[in-house]
Length: 297
Ligand code: AMP
Image (cartoon, protein in one colour):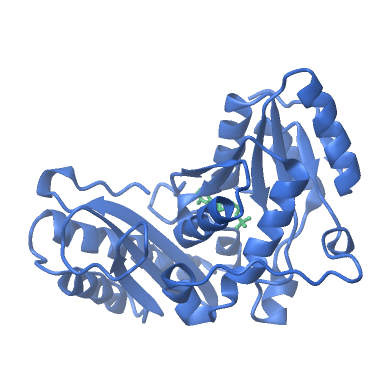
């Protein structure tokens, strides 16, 4: 794709002015929020936003609040120049790169909290019920700042996308939320900014995560698993064979994230595990009809 001229903007008023000016010409706006360290997964979202809208805004902001550990925040890769270049190559027209003070000025006191199974299960159970509060708060701020017609999120963070859908609905934010398929390396590893921290051996071991999700999906589609627990067991066995003990490996309803009670309809299979000192998450959606099992998101 040809590189477009990308405007880098650091403040909310400037961002609003730039978007108001484009909207005056009838432009529509697509938005991709990111924490930078852009890879092909992010770029696929940006390409989609750019192909569907006149203006494609990408935010690059490492939100300090969802990090449970200071070291995780410190280790988060940052290279703004490379990110802006990658975003431009993918078709971005505006890169919004605010400072922490721009997003959280003195006196900032608000939190967006989604409660219920959507935030209590899976990542919420492992990382605490408040884990999504920081993400929800910053995404709400960004959606208000950008005012996009459509915002794009990756299915790799399926729970995050569901939480965003929930508060966007509840707060009547007039933005459509699109969840796009997970981009993977050829060998199945879901792309993640964290993969850069894996050693060669760790990367090899991490392949067991997508393989385990696939093993559970296969057990559902070929009928060898007759219950959600049996499907999970197939996945966990695959992980154990690779020396990995998952934090969770769950078969749930893809809309509510409640544990699946039976193998019917669409199911979300999710996994989190630390490999080589790097915490990784992945998931895929399957249809529990034998012929129709799909395993690409
Ligand atoms: P992050 O920078 O990790 O906050 O991610 C920004 C957006 O990119 C989120 O909506 C993620 O779900 C999405 N994303 C991250 N990895 C992938 C991937 N491998 N495929 C598709 N989308 C992704």
